[in-house]
Image (cartoon, rainbow, N blue to C red; front, side, top):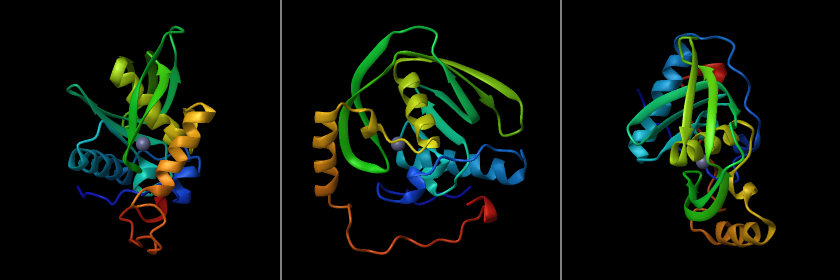
Length: 180
Ligand SMILES: [Zn+2]
């Protein structure tokens, strides 16, 4: 397992819809391991493959002792309930904004071995799964804010120390070969 560098806001990979996984092979299991390892290294609730530069529909999560991953997740909302609260993103480091999400979610997907899996979550777990699934569609949580809040968020992002530093993007040989 290898901790991977996190792609930051502005990296095109974060705006590119990820491709569905077709091959449930060793490389996929390596990707899930890397996601899990990197997520734990960063002490975050979840991580999506595009955040480590891999354009595949895979994410990992660890919320309140629920550790897992989803391949090709599809979300279903069993009711209309919403939640509002602070949300952040490793790709937008240090910035948190109140973000409306659905309170309850049913996520259907596959394990890295290709077995169908269903995750029923609410509260923080539901928020996390929605956040990570958004990443797979090239959507960032600031896109979910209303217009005024989004303006504030963009201002904060442009003012952030890590934003547009003029440094070249980190070039890294991906262990996933053509998957990256
Ligand atoms: Zn994120």
